[in-house]
Image (cartoon, rainbow, N blue to C red):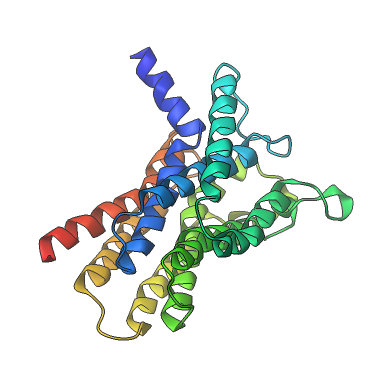
Length: 276
């Protein structure tokens, strides 16, 4: 049992789980463009996510994730180094266009933790922008980059998808903001710090309603799979958002909330099999 717990903790704290969540969103985007098996690109996205998240979490700029992790830090470092090497290797397998579109996203990730702004601030410590930067990075990596890979066009449906993914990620971040109330400095001006926990949940609910309604603005006759999966993931997200408390179990956010994108992919696959 102790070994299983250690493996699970490594799975969570090594960012393997959140990387799978990211890859799930990438796969959902690819499936909307008719690409069902792009394993090399999914591995590329996975290793990039592990590298980026561990870079952010375990840099000197972050103070929240070092507690109780000293024994596993060596393994996490090895995982991060291997992931970064594999990510770099796979990057050369794709077109220069994909890499060019990734440059701004990588730059945002670096600026998120590297103090280059006045008063030695990074983007994470700029008041009120943290979750919006994360939302922008995730929308870019899970919608824009896959669309470039699929050789899709940046039409109206693409921009609607970008906005939807941005809103979805913002809502997924709110439980983390509520959890981190006890850690975050007041100068961060996070959403719960500014408006309180209950209003944060109301704010997230409004964003989810907009996320859902935007589906109806897409052109053409939408597949029933997309409509039903969007309704279901909106419902699941609402339940997790309203189930969030300031004091919560250790893995409520880092496992269950981060599982929502994986659930979303599972729902899409299940519905596709049901509706052919």
